[in-house]
Length: 400
Image 1 (cartoon, rainbow, N blue to C red):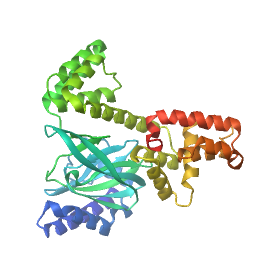
Image 2: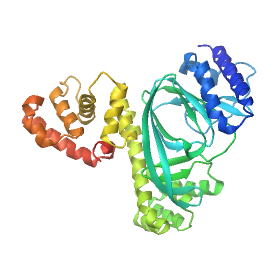
Image 3: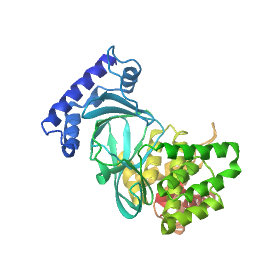
Image 4: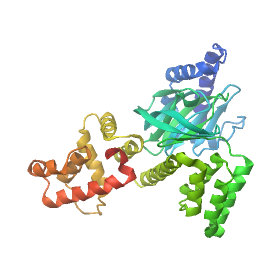
């Protein structure tokens, strides 16, 4: 696709958005509906492609205005006006954890499929306005395909997570430039923190921690503990978050100081850091897998909260297949490293794992071993595999 075609699509889309929103007096509360209707009507998904957008970004038409950069990886501004912007979202292995936007508007999936979780968050304790402790609850798990449009109200009215199934997924967002709310990131089971730009003081302190870890790792525990004792819960959480993300083990001084800082909320802080580790495990594992169906299964394990949600999501993605059979097949693919040239795991083993992971008991499976086709060795493998999965955060929704 030539960059000229991309420019024509963007010009037509921005003109219609401005005309439609101007008729509403540029009222921010009306913009999700306006943006959703325009995207559905003009359907840029029928014309915009990954190659076309990349070409447009690296070699825009002569005379094109300079587009502002966006800090997020894979997000590129295609149009920027006084009232709204158009941005392309290029998805690789990344997962968008639960988050809420400061802008209102809508987005359209231009290619591929994505699994989205919609959440509510009830605040139980607030450390200033930037850090909140509460209960994050999954209300709905939805599959979106190419051409689907999702309206985005500003703030916590829409808290959602997004996992694109295929690498190379592409979406287009239409977003207001007015800031009616804070962008927030949520970690399960219930920590919410604003995603605003870090101030210079925070950047310097976090930079010092990274230098300490690089030059004298033994200093990190004391430095983190000292930061906890400064009395800024938001900055302290950012430091704990980065330390966990970098794979640093939290020392005794840090844990003691964090426990004193957060009090009764320390358990929620710890649990959210465990959720971060599960998130990173997902990202790393997705990077090793090309099979689309298996990547979708991983997405269900990240978003869903229980096995019924997982089975429902599998059935929605592949309506013609038995979700329990799919579950068993995916588990054998993840658990058994089949060497090149060797025979794949038997269907009976996959069936046995699927039965147990769907809520069946080992005793029932042994009684039906002839019907299922599992021999004694396969039954023993299933028993040990299920026990191991119960302890692994990756499989959390199957064994809650």
